[in-house]
Amino acid sequence: MAQGNSVLEVKNLTHVYTDSRSHVETEVIDNVSLSFQEGKFVCVLGPSGCGKTTMLNIIAGFIRPTSGSVVFEGKEVKSPSPERAMVFQDYALFPWLTVSGNIQFGLMMKNTPAKVREAKVTEYLEMMGMKGFEHKYPFELSGGMKQRVGLARALAVEPKMLLLDEPFGSLDAQTRRTMQRELFRIMAQAKKTSIFVTHSIDEALFLSDRLIVMSARPTRVLIDIELKSAKPRQRSDKEYSEVYEKVDKVITAEVSKSIE
Amino acid sequence: MSSRVRKIRENAYVMNTIGIAVFIALWWLAVEARLISPLFVASPLAVVQVLFTQTASLAQNTYITLVTLVESFLVAAAIGILAGAVTGAFDVADWVISPILDLLRSVPNVAWVPLAIIWFGIGIESQIFVSAFSAFFPIFTNTYVGFKSVRPSFIRAGYNLGASDRDVFFRIRLPASLGQVFPGLKLGIQNGMAGLIAIEFLDSTSGLGFMMGEASDFFKANIVIMDMLMIGLLGFALTMTLVLAEKRFLGWQRRTS
Ligand SMILES: Nc1ncnc2c1ncn2[C@@H]1O[C@H](COP(=O)(O)OP(=O)(O)O)[C@@H](O)[C@H]1O
Ligand SMILES: [Mg+2]
Image (cartoon, rainbow over all chains, first blue to last red):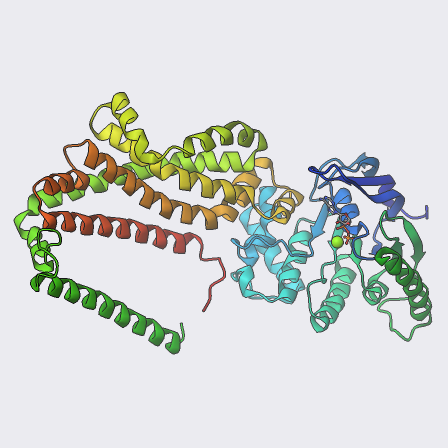
C-alpha cells in the first residue's frame, strides 16, 4: 500500500517483554511492517492480548521496541510527542483538573496564552456537544463524557495523528453506539490521520477507511484491506457484510487458537 | 447534602455528646463513691480546677508545646515531602536513599533522645530534633508511596501532551500524590507529638510533658490528667487544620454525597 502520502511507517517491528523477576520472555509483536497514509482512519482489530496496545505504545513513543523502528514524518520515534496524541482506554483524565483544565493541559505545556486556551476549550467542548461543562471535575462525568473530554484533550494540541486505544472499550453497548456516531461526526470535521484499536468488528467497519486484522500473540498482520464504500456504512451494505464475514472468520480462528 | 443525610449526621453528634457525658458521669461517680482512689484518678471537678489554680503554668507550657510541635512539624513536612517526592519519582534516588531510611526507621523515635541531648544539649533544639524525626517517617513514607504509585497512564498522558520531566513532577506526580500525602501529615502530627512529649518528659524544663512529669512526682493526678487533655486537644486542633487543608486541596476527589 504505497500510494498516498505516508505519515508513519512501522518497519519490521518486533517486541519481546522480559519479566524482570523470572526473566521469562514473551514475544508479543513479530516483525510487523505497516505504512499509514495521510488523512486515513485506520482500524486495527485483533484478539485481546495480542499486542495491539503494545504496538500503539511503541508508535506513541511510550516504549522502545526490541527491534525494528517507527518512523514518523521521516524521523525515528524515540519519545512521546503531542504530534501523535493518544486517547486512552481508561481515559487517563487528570482528576485534579476540571474539564477545562484537562483540555488545555497540552496547550499550557506549549505556553499558549490563556485567551487562546480558553477559546480552544470552548471550541472543542462545543464540538463534543459538552457546552457548559468547563468547570466540572472528571468524577462528575459519565464514561461517555469522560471519553469526549479525552478526545477533546488530544485534539486540542492539534496533533498530526490521533492514536485511539479501544477508547470505547469501557462503555456500555448503548453509549458505545452513540460514541461511535459522535466520533464519526467529529472525524469528518477534524480529518485526522488516525489509528483506532478495537476488538469490535462492527465498530471497525462503521468507522474505518482501512482495516488491519492482527493475529494472536506473537502478532502479525493477517488482513489489510481498504474499504472503498462511502461512510457511514450500514450493516446491509454489500461491502460491509462481505468484509464482516471474512474478518469474523479469521478472528474466530485466531481467538480459538489463542485459547488452546 | 440531603436533609436525610443531615439528620443522620445530627443524630451522630447527639450520640457523640451522650457518649462523652455518660463517660464523665461514670468517672465522677466512681471517684465520688471511692471505687477508685482520687490519688490515682482525680475527679473531673479536680481536673477542671487545674484550669483556675494553674492557669499561668498551664497556658505557658501548652503554648511552648504547641510552638515546638508546629516548628518540628514544619521541618518534618518540608524534609519528608521533599525526600519522599524525590525518592518516589526517581529510581536512582530510591536506590541510594531508601536503604538508609529503612535502617533508621527501625530505631524507635524515643531512642534518639540520648543522642539528641549529646548533640544539642537540653533545650529547644534537641526537642525539635526528636519531634521532627518522629514526624518525618510517616510523612516521608506516604509521600514516597504516593509519588511511586501514580497511575502510569497519567504520566504517559502528560508526556504525550508535551509535558517536560519537570512538568510531570510538579503538575502530575505531585497532585496525583496529595491523596497519600495528607494522611501522612496527619500521622506525622501524632508521631511528632508523641516524640515531643517523650523528650519533654525525660529531659526538659518546660512544655506539657515536663509539667506532667513534675505533677507526677508530687502525685497530682488532676494536673497530669489536665495536661493529657491539653495534649489531646492540641493534637485534635492541629489534625483538624490539616483536614481543612485537605478538603481545600482535594476537593476534586470523588465525594460521596
Ligand atoms: N509491561 C508488560 N510486561 C510484560 N508483559 C506485558 C506487558 N504489557 C503487556 N504484556 C503482555 O503482552 C501481551 C500483549 O498485551 P497488549 O499489547 O496489552 O495486548 P492487547 O492490547 O492486544 O490486548 C499480553 O499477553 C500481555 O500480558
Ligand atoms: Mg489493549
